[in-house]
Amino acid sequence: MKITISAIAFLTSSVLSLTSVQGHGLIEYPPSRNQICGVETKPHEVIYGGNPATPECEDPFTEDFTGGYSFMSVLTHDIGRMGGRSDHVCGFDSETWQGGATPWDIAMDWPTTDMEAGRQEIRWNIAWGPHFLDTEEFRYWITKPGFEFDSGSELSWDDFDEEPFCVLFYSDNDRSGNPDVVADIQSTTFSTYCDIPPRGGRHVIYGEWGRNEWTYERFHGCIDVMFEGDPVSEDPEDSEDPEDPTPPTAAPTAESPSEDSEPVPAPSCVVRIRDGANPWWAGLDVGFDVPTIVLDFSDTGLDLGDVTVDASNFNAEYSGQTITLTKPNWVSGSNPGYIGINGNNVADLASFEPPFCGAVTRRYLREA
Image (cartoon, rainbow, N blue to C red):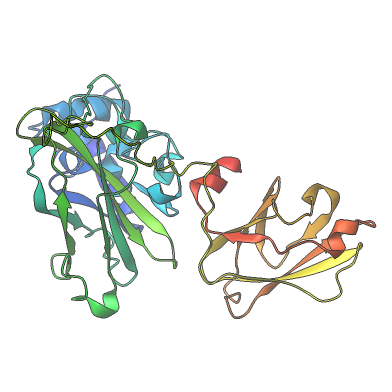
């Protein structure tokens, strides 16, 4: 099939116009994968000829030509890595790709940037959607000390430390409140400053920019970096007193937040059982400020399979013992909506406990 320059230009402008309407951003320094292959090198430059800044971008753009223009739209609407693991690391199962792999998840020899341990800047470019007002936090993870990069294998969460090495909070009401987060309104950037852990050799830093409960929109990206020296061992030997070594003690292992981890409560959510509950009827008042929550009936003593639920005040989706609720504009934490539960002489309906009101995390997305 012959593709003309005008057709390429039309496709490029159409995709960029579509994604820019929705806003968004990425890590521009040190350059993330989607900065290198997206901002600096476009798909048509490597696929159909041109002078690409990074010829290596041909591999990811061959896999997903159109997706390469959505470099600023690697996003989800949840609380990110703290809520559980994704199948794909760098794109975090982005909604833009319907949960699939992005061009920046593919296995290849990605270009690297030199990095040193200690305080370093990580800068986000949010020109495609300058959401300063509702920005809440930035989080960063790094690969384990013993990590060995494999250009033939996609990254996995087992490659990374369980806990973020840097968590920074931001409030637009007090822009100077955190000296490690600098909002530059004119240049539409966030400069974040973190203490990078000591590493040797090649590593990957994964980052998130999270907006608050107004949307829970979150952006994801990976930075490939190179430290001086050889890889640092995960279990360095204690050489301070070799003549009288202290028996090692097992360090506590942090459980990865997965489907089986503890659910995260939704902020400002109120669930109240109305008076008069009986084996034929119970009413719930449910109020919350975030757009969407999950009601989890697992520990209530009530089996939803034994009753009929009327949640017509909300947009409701049902899955086993959970109900995902998206609220209308009039519902809030102080102005609840109504849910009716009807049964046919179901004894538990008269005595069940209020359901848990959870934030929308991967725990619930995977169970749905």
